[in-house]
Image 1 (tube, rainbow, N blue to C red):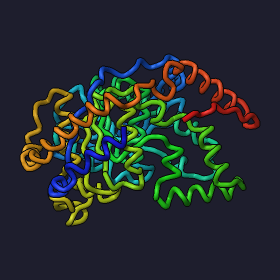
Image 2 (spheres, one colour):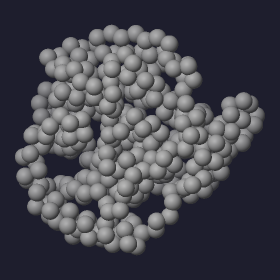
Image 3 (spheres, helix red, strand yellow):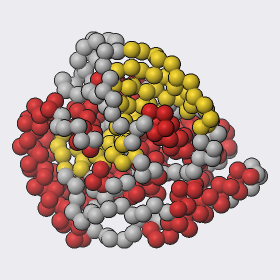
Image 4 (cartoon, rainbow, N blue to C red):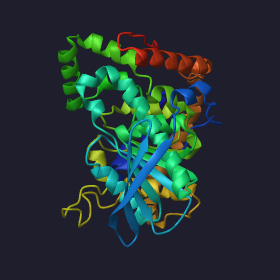
Length: 403
């Protein structure tokens, strides 16, 4: 219930501004996520697994080893950057990229986890989804990304004996987490930062200039209006947190949102929080890009030889604390100084959240999620539509998307 949540922020905003952020505990009334439909598994099922892989050591550090791995699969190659801590353990975290490219943010996060004893791997993305000429193939590109993510889990289970998996994603990477972790129950512990849901409307409302440039390029290529662009996008895209995030377990999730975010608009982050069952949430007094100042991704002394622009690696420490707790590695004492500093703000926030959660639980709609009890039919129809489209480029059969 957005209106209730928004009113609560006014109670803590002045005090929170002093620390830059505040936390809200999990909402009331949550028990467990709904069971995943069998057709969901079939829609994102990988045929044939992986056939071979090549691993090389890219870098050796005192606390971790960076392996560059290429895994050959029937769904295309998977390129992994695996940061293996010197401490052997059955746990690991996947870092989902913001976008295709150099993965500067992701490499920093993965290195940070490995330096603190938690293995991490980046599942690299191609840039094909940003190609306007492949607009009609967006859903297949997104679907195959999820399939390759699942094959990466298979790979680390079989080749490295990993058993406990988590994920962390920032921005577009967080949206990917809300999809793949919604699909695959092995991704049990998940951190999403600056993410959102409902891709079609998010496209429409984002202030990201690259999105508008992409829309204009697609329209020029296809000779369609803006209304037709969004109509086709809505008909095509099924791989969206809107249809998967409610399968994640709120008890094992952490959400980090920026209150002034207009790139992934804050309201879409709140909607994702609702879809996930109101997990523990950190609210940053920042927008999408200044939110990165709560990390030490950007160094004051390039190339990353000194401290970050923000004097404390806040997002990294929140994630590390979360994973150490879920992997039963003990408390992350590095978080203690900030917890002490933030304590008064969090007390106020938690009291407000308790009141707001109670009000929200009483008055919010308890309707079933978007696809509700028809989940099996929804994903079965998605399989049929996808099969028809892949069978012939002439056929254009789409699954209607109802908001």
